[in-house]
Every structure is written in structure tokens, then in C-alpha cells.
Length: 271
Image (cartoon, rainbow, N blue to C red):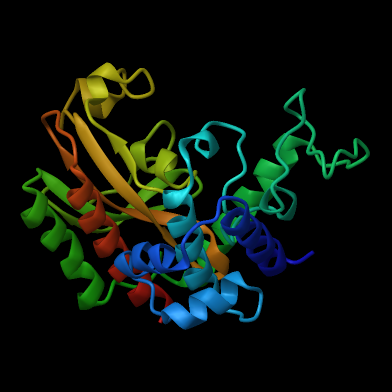
């Protein structure tokens, strides 16, 4: 089963199983930058149309936003994204021992969970390289978006950051020095693990980041919010993010605004 078939099949199954309203799905989809019409999205969810990886991912995101709370716990099946490994995209995660991927109850699949993660990281880095963004300067259309984000949210800084093998590459950063930073243990490393907005309200109270050099020392990060951006093939290659030196939270409307700005970055990258 191809990535595209797996993604479409599982997404269709969830829409049918939970009787999700396609009009509501399209409303969330369009609100995050989706470009297809409601008719095309409905046809995609009926299995009668194909759409691009970016648009499929935005539909998956919309479906996941509308799933009941029971599907948001760890291990529950959610609509997959185009960068997922095929077995995960089919809705089958690690087995009980959490180191073997089990497909439809079969225990003979040889792929370990660690190998799956290595494969996904290899695909992600390949997508980052093929995007050309590491070498080329960002277009003015992309470079202006972090400034818009910082001004809108009133934060200390905002950036478009690429997650390379060992470092974070800030391609457009407003409010902080423009230099590469270590990837390990960073906010952006966490952001590219999933296709949803990643928020840390107070890094000093979060055990994942409380001892980070950038939290306990300059620039004293306390708040972070970032939404992943995708490269060719649908892999998560970086994020549009905002940071502040004081704790805070985002309202639902503010989260929506951040996703909209990230969608604009996304559209500029892939078009």
C-alpha cells in the first residue's frame, strides 16, 4: 500500500466511523490554508479524488481536530500524514513490547520501532535537502512572516527554523541573533515530531526543557509555540515559531492565527 493510499484509506475510515461532518472538516481545512473546494475534499474522503500531499495533510489535520477525545490519547488511531511510515499510516503502531511494528495482528514484520524512526529521520533529512532551503535565502514573502507573527503575538522573537541533523538553522529570525543552535533537546525538535501546533506555556515548569541552557540562561526562554512546515514529500522539515521570555498561553483564536501564518510559509515553500 502506498503512502497516499494508506493516508486516504485511514482518513476515510475515521470520518465514517465517527460520522464526522464533511462541511465542518472543510471549514477547519480551509482555515489552516487548504485550497481545495468542499466538493473536492468530500470526493477525496469518498475515495473518488486524489489531492496533493500538502492538501492531504491539511485534511488529516482537520479530521484530527474533530475527532472525539477518546482518539487523542497515546496509541489511538488518528488520521495519518504523508510523511508517516506506511505501517504507521495504516493505523498500526508499535506492538505491546513497543519495539516491533505489528501489521493487522501479524508478528512476523521484521521492522523494529527504532528502524522505523531512523527511516523517518532519513526521509525527513532528504526532504530538507531537496527543498533547497538550507542553501538559498528565503523569499521576501516568507521572510516577512516571522515579523508579522512577532508583531501580532507581541512576543520577544519569531522565526522560520529548519531542523537539520545536528543544528537548528534559523532562516528568518526577528528579535534574536541569527545563528545556528543545537538541535538536541530543543523546542523545534519536538515540533517536527507531529503535525500539530506544539506549545510550551512555561519552559521552567516543563521537565523536558527546564534545564536547557537557553531557559536557565540567556535569552531565558519561557514560552514557545511552533507549527511544523513540510518539505517535498510531506516530511516535517522545520517550524514557524514564536518565543517569549515570560510564561503565557495561546487562545484558540491565537492558535488558529499561528497555523494560518505557518500555512502561508508552507504554500510559499511548495509552490
